[in-house]
Length: 305
Image (cartoon, rainbow, N blue to C red):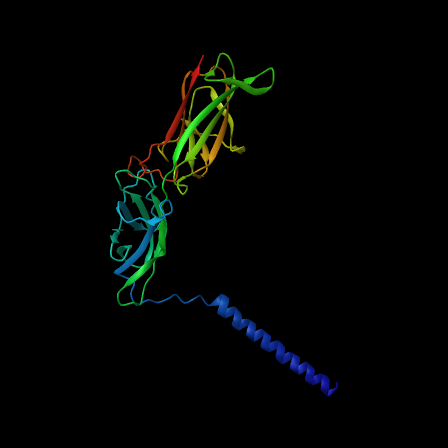
């Protein structure tokens, strides 16, 4: 074998070994060795600072607010929640921030309106308190700013069309559901969100419909998109039963939403009042007026023979 070829092969072998060694080092650095957690001098007895901002008023919330901290994993929106907070925050007028004494770790924070005339929805956040090396033991919450949202004004309207067997369409305008005259109807619920302040909202929830015997909501749509109609017969989870419901999305000021529900009579339907309730903010189930301080909008129609 020529001497020159031997040298080239030897050089190639050395290069391959170097590549393998470098590959092993890179793998150990980025994959095998876990990242070293940051070590702080102080992790207990901290003063935790944060701010609460309300986009509807373009300002920080500083008064008439209750701020509670709970251990991680707790859900203060539960219907029968009774757990006590581990700490509550106070507002520092001089420095313009909220503060609370806590140890480093993860928490759930609940912010609620305590004014006599409430405006914003309760909010729940998962937050983290970091440690610090600063001698003053002051830290900023992560995230350091938490938002609350004012509730907008809602109006509900309804329109009923009976099914025309001759035309094959829902084109007979009626004011009630008369189970003697017709056997199919389309009820259109119009939700209008309005307010002088465009930053206000309506939280996502459910449209609840009274369960009238043998008057079945066979299908529905929201804003032209097919929507499921579900019967709720179990009150153990949310305290609500004996209704049908349709999920509703979050809404903003200036929006108009339409829910169409198609009803059919099966056998002989009962007469009475069919109530539609826009149950806002379904995620917040806490009973009474503790958190659900607003009055959910309702509208009724008559089922008669």
